[in-house]
Image 1 (cartoon, rainbow, N blue to C red):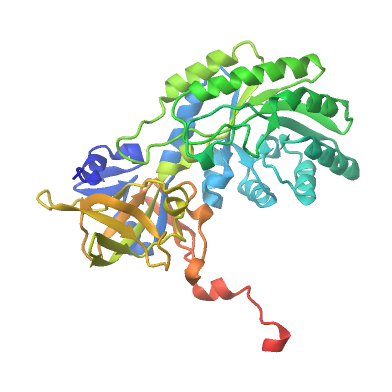
Image 2: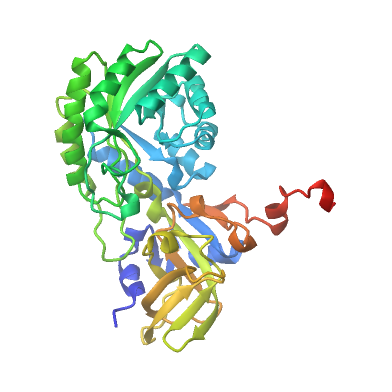
Length: 435
């Protein structure tokens, strides 16, 4: 049986955006037990300091290379998180009209917002052009024609970048590999120059950048350097065709450690490698990190509501569920799960499944996990939950959305109220024949 993971996490809590004191886990200067006592469970809690430290580390690693870090809003779109990053001078990477409106409301200037995605609606393109964002990242010849039509209808030019598919394998989960030729994303390398020429010839458009996104959970510079090497071929060709490019966007995908033994990004080495590879281009570098900034800034707090010993295994049942955090069910993703107060050193461990109360076999957070079996009522923290947790949450089984709390130093405040069942049903209407 493996060693319980809480021993490794309590020894190095900073890897997970935490600190430990007197046998208890804290986010910044607030104990997780205090958060749960004040705000209940399940609750997402985030540390603003970790988000800002990650942003600053990435910027510092690229000093000397003009760089704009555009936060991937889809990772966590809470207004308080967005405003924290906007005030720190980050840009925003958006994929919908809703995210555009969120970014603008949070204080991001239009000139630091880029719009990605394969299925933009006319209304979304209109809003992006009208807002005068930095660029719309187009992904096909058909989308180029769509943006031309919308710009013509609005009587306003549009800045665009080509999202190219460099066919680079980042060796990650199949759902997260977005830069392979079989994925739905991006323009094939062989088509890039032809499409660029169409953009250059259109008076309604200005071609300002070349972009890509190769995947997620990448912890070294190698795949990014390979992608940049391929993009430089496109940059040379489209520049020779008359484009006046201002930036190259390598997308997001920087990974975080979900398990205590997983590798972390060597940020100074990563930045130095990218800066060296960008030398001589004269272009601004854009990066679009999401989970790298917020993933380990967050934890999902949950209480044990029961235990059940089956024929083959022991189940620990908690009050959070797959509707709150779907990543384990969707990706078979690993999230460290630890008690918020360290158990006694002599406590024995067992193999357990940590599950929620939803009526699905996929409602689990861990299977066959070695941990000290917690008591009913004990508080657990599911780590690495700051990214793609609440942003992918649902109300399945009519379970209201969890609360969200932001911590800054010794301050903690609700940034999303716990949803009530009444609010969950408020938008539903009876048709005339059922009234």
